[in-house]
Length: 317
Image (tube, rainbow, N blue to C red; front, side, top):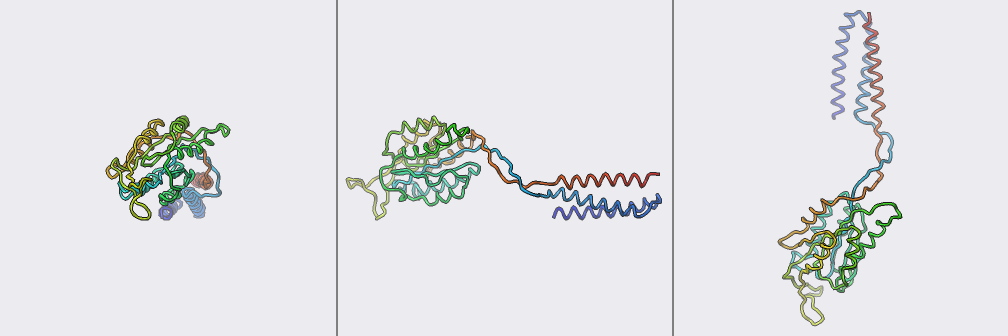
C-alpha cells in the first residue's frame, strides 16, 4: 500500500514537472524531444529508487549470530505424595500450571525436564523448543515412575552427568550458565546430598528449590479408593519438608521459595533467574536473505547524474 502511494505521488510530481519543463522549453526555444528523454530518465530513476526502497532479496547467505544464553533444568517430583490436595487442586497439578507459565518466559534459553521419585529420568533433553517442553509438562502424572521411596539425590546426579560433557576442555568451549529448578514437597528417603551438592556448586550451576505443600500436610488419595497407608496400616499424612530444599538452595547460591494456596514461589524464582546472565556466548548460524538494494540505488544515482548532464547541455547558451 505504501509503495503504491509513493508511486502515485511520484507520477503526479512527474506530470507537474513535465508541464513546467514544457513552459521552460518554449521560453528557451529548445526542441520538445529533449523533454521526452528527460521524462523517461526521471521515470526510470523513480522506479529504481522505489525498487531500492522495497529492498529486493536475491539469494540466501549464512550469518553467524552470537547469543548469551543459559540452560534451565526443571526437576519435578512425581512421587505419590505429590497427589496430596493440601495445595489445590493437588500439589502436582498446581506445579504443572506454574511451570508452564515459567517456561514461556525463557524463549532464548535451552530448557530440559527431569522427573523423579524412587528414580530419575530425563523426560525432555535440553532444547530451544518451548512447545515441546510444554507438552511434556502437561503429561506429568504420579504413575510415570515405579513406586518406592523418593530420593532427591538421583535427579541431582542425573543433571550432573548432563553437565559433564559441556564442561570438558576438549571442545575448547566454556560451560554454559546453568540453573536447576527443583519442584518437590521435600520428602527425601535417599542418600546424603553432600557429594552431589559439592559437585553442583563446583560446576557453577545454581539450584532453585520450590517447596510444594503445607506444614499441616494432607492425606494422599489411593488409586483404588481411600488413602495411602504405611506398612503398619496407618493412613499416611504427607507434609512439606523444607530442610533438604533449603540446603540445596543455600549450598549452590540459589534460593528457596514456597508454593501453596497463599504463596506463589515461582514469581520469586523467575525474578532471580531473569537477573542471571548467560556466561558463554554461543554462535548459531541462521539463514538470512541477501538485500540487493545497492544495485537499483546505484542505477538511480547514475540516472540522476545523466539527467543533470542533459539539463546543463540543454540550457547551455
